Amino acid sequence: MFGIEFKNKAGNEALTGRSVIGREIFYFFSVLLLVFIILEIIWPNIILVYFNLNWLLIPWLIFGLIL
Image (cartoon, rainbow, N blue to C red; front, side, top):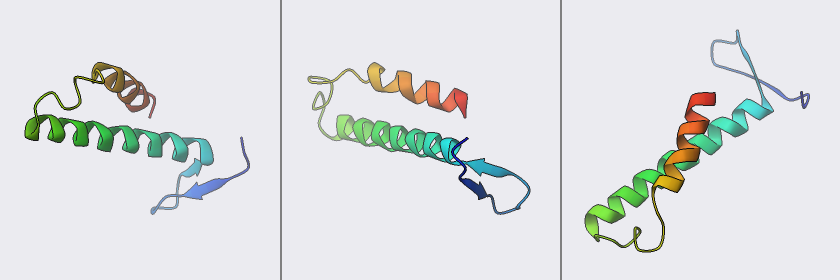
């Protein structure tokens, strides 16, 4: 679509720029969720007082299902 194509290591499947960006967003949400969970274990209610983790879980699931 954007004219940008990336080859995976096997070289048989071209990845478009859009799928690479979607995968990177999924990785970002995964790391953010992991960091927030670790912070909640170390300091209880440090994140949950200000932010509901369900709002982060929803886009994480959406990007995970799309990819």
